[in-house]
Length: 92
Image (cartoon, rainbow, N blue to C red; front, side, top):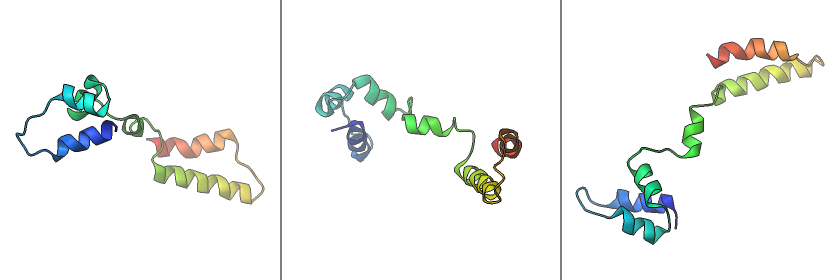
C-alpha cells in the first residue's frame, strides 16, 4: 500500500464525501503530513519537481545528441566549446 493508492482512494470518493487523513494514513501506512500535502497539491513528487529543473527539453536533448554523433561520424569529435555553443541557444 502506498501514497499513490491512498491518493487514488481519495480521488475515487464522491464529491463532498468525508474522509480522515489520519485514518487513511494509518490504513496505507504513510505519513499523514505527506498524504495531506500531496492531496492538497502542496507538494509534488520528485519526478515532477525535476521536470522543471532540467535545462534541455527531451526533444532538444535528442537534437544535441544527433549533432554530436554527426561530428563523431566524421572522425572529428566536437570540443566542449563546440557543444556549449550549440547547446546554449537550446537551453533558452
